[in-house]
Image 1 (cartoon, helix red, strand yellow):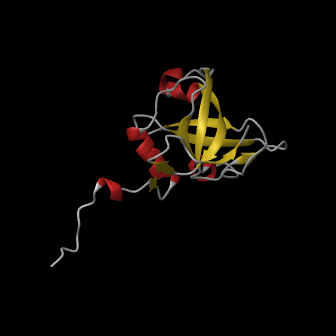
Image 2 (image 1 turned 90 degrees about the vertical axis):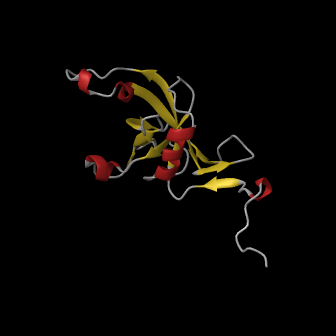
Image 3 (image 1 turned 135 degrees about the vertical axis):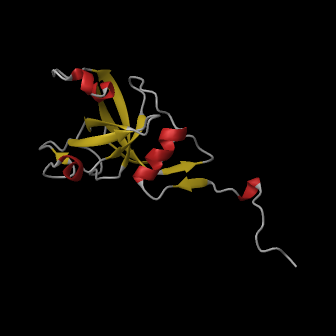
Length: 151
C-alpha cells in the first residue's frame, strides 16, 4: 500500500509564492524582506484605501496631469508605517487599494507642526511610487515582477 501523503522533496517546492492580497504580501515583506529606509532604494508598500482610512472623497486622488496621490503602508520591521506619496508622472496603471508598489524614499523632511514628538518620524520621508508589482516571490528570480511603471 502506498501512503497517500508523501513528503515533499526539494524538487517539489513551488517556483513561486503567490499571495492572496497585497496586505498579505506586505506582512511577509515586513518579516523577511527589505525594510531599512535608504534614500533612493525601493521598499515594498501597499496602497491604502484613503476613503475608508482617512475619510477622503476617493480611495486615491488623480491630479489633472494624471499624477496619482496615494497613502501607503510601507514595509518595516514593526509591521509597516504610513506615508503619503505620489507617482512622479501620469504614466502607468491607475492605482487602487491593496495594490503592491515599490516606494522610493528621496529625502526626510520633518513636518512643521507643534506636536512633532507625537508623529512617527518615518512619516517625514518624501518619496515616489515608481512601480506596481505582482504580490508574489519567484524562487528563481530575486526581482519583483513589474506590472506597471510610473516613470
